[in-house]
Image (cartoon, rainbow, N blue to C red):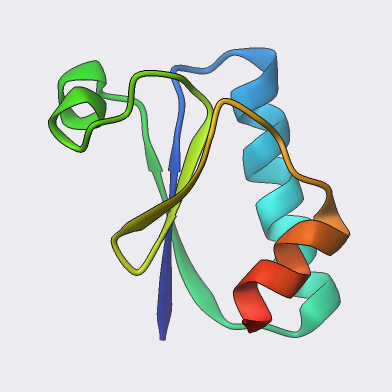
Length: 78
């Protein structure tokens, strides 16, 4: 099962990314474990300097922007 990590401190963009991730999974019929990480130390340990950020199976894919639901569906299916 795919593991998706959403990094963010709770700002509006971070919440929107988490919402878009869940919508993309539902829209694409994709099963995944979604983990929300709000700890700043955990983020900096992973090299994340700008939020929101997204990792798929441990690889950072997005930093500092919120992709659309359709962009996320394509990314998850790739």
